[in-house]
Length: 233
Image (cartoon, rainbow, N blue to C red; front, side, top):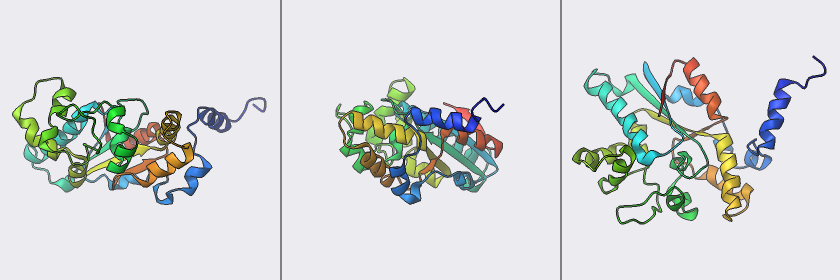
């Protein structure tokens, strides 16, 4: 009816009030990293699955993605071009997965290892994105993520489950634009700088191959419409 506000206008106002709507400053910064739905074209194969995880879980979900891809290869004789995966990066709280999408410079500057309680084998907070190119010496994270004592296979699996490695096997990593905006406010609230500058810097320091989507809740829906299966982690 004419007395009710248009649904689109209402939702837009609600999102803006929550502080997660796209900002003018964001539109001016890192134009090549603006939200898009084109990422689905980068998930190869007939067998495709989206792994939804908003918590880093010390890399446990990356292990599940590796298992998915490897099992199709070894047990079902599928080539890398026949199988693809997508992985979600979002959330703004300590423990969220969004930090996995940024390079070492961001991890060091904003002390993301300490913020997300990610510690190396000596108990020191990581100053690099340990999930980009992990080493066998980082395998203790899998023990924490899976809740079991360290076992020998973790040593070999750790380098293989790195984001760069999984990308080479057909995995597309996507990051929520709304979460990125909100996280820039959160970092600013902790005295890390001006929100607009933080936002632009985050966008300029995404890992290679990570794409920003308008909203993860929509990306998940569109992925299923496109025939990409859903796996909640």
